[in-house]
Length: 185
Image 1 (spheres, rainbow, N blue to C red):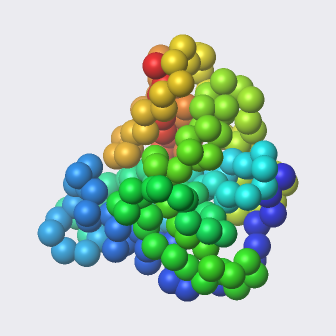
Image 2: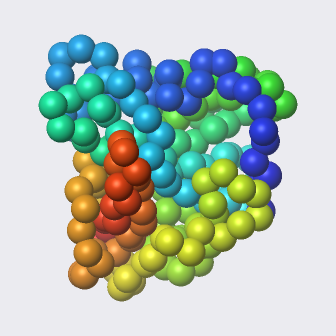
């Protein structure tokens, strides 16, 4: 199980996401800078212990109506060789681990492999902020038939039905929500 370090990151994850998010084609915000709040998510363990994996939900409160976004992140001690430039959110100085390269999990092969393992029941979702603590709010329904993970980048509340990966987040003001994070063919 991966350890959660109680330390600083400069710039912070939210600062990196704030600069990166408006450049994404699925961003639904206004032309200005988003105002992001961490709203939920969970972690997955890399079996090799090299990549930190966080499946984060952020809410943009700058829009007329808040919008929740799914931002899976891969934290690495070195760059991904051959990765597309748009895959990198940026680098951050971690108070314990040193320089971290922060990648969009949609472009990180370890993040993708662990999401698929989760969808197959072969990985255990972990609490976002506590070491060695399973996150029992994350549920998986069905089994994928192909190795392709489709991320729902803009989240809307749903009830578990035919979709595959569901988890919780919190809207500004504390209202809980539950929705589909990802599906697989």
